[in-house]
Length: 174
Image (cartoon, rainbow, N blue to C red; front, side):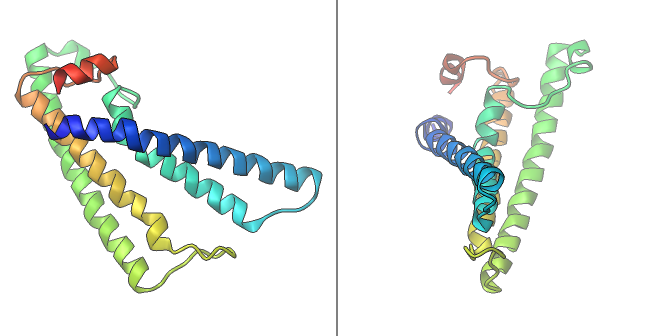
């Protein structure tokens, strides 16, 4: 099934890339802080690369983190609702979230296309093409779309649709 393939892709490809980008971001930021504070020298590219690496690291893992419940959630009201009613509310909420993710995807495509056509680049000496930097929004939106499709599918099939507590639970559901 497609959801199993996506989970494996997230764990075997996106997760290592995300960790690498996070470590790179932290290393560049630390190096820049040392250079600035001890040697009174600053690299104008370091801050930009550090920030973009951090953004990419986070955006690559948003949907994956949601599968494990590593997101903000308010359970005060939902815990007071019957299980069956809660399931329908979650399905409706995930449908709206899916619509929002599709809207973000569409908007991101417009922004990336505009940046590509207009040859926009960053203002540092690196002159990074903004379309390449902003393309993470397209990638993250696609991952979120599949995440919400999976939640809706699980809700319709009467499988647990709240966050998963362990990796084994995810693999059993798929």
